[in-house]
Length: 197
Image 1 (tube, rainbow, N blue to C red):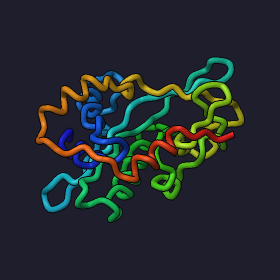
Image 2 (tube, rainbow, N blue to C red):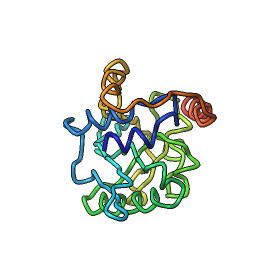
Image 3 (cartoon, rainbow, N blue to C red):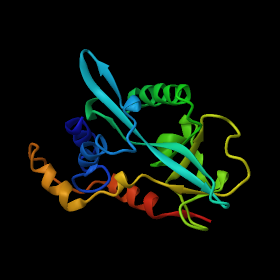
């Protein structure tokens, strides 16, 4: 999966990528959910992968609710923008609901996820720090109404805190690919640094 993820994310958000290293680390992390490590095959070839981890929401009285987050969602470049990501997402949502999960919180490009039922974190009063609602943070209720009118602080798994130096070292195990700038990186920067007020 590391090679697929690397090809899917190379130069997308930054020159190069570190998502393949995250995949490598994630599988041995206690927050990883193996039952939600899903692949999509076409003609006996793996063309997509999605991986989920545990996360939590904490209300104002410090009550916790265990929820999910996913990422990376990787589709091989030859198959991107053809609906395969949608298929993988929808299947994963159904599987997560079967496993009695009620909420998914992610960081991503809203253009890719709003059509899949994700809404702004602000609409559910889910924040990262008091008063901070990132534009890239979205929420999907698998059980409608599960998030009541309380305020919720989102706590992501530490597995998403990537050691960039270790990621660079890990990348030397793969075929050399050119790091370069492309417009999607500026889009990523804008989304990841914007807040909703």
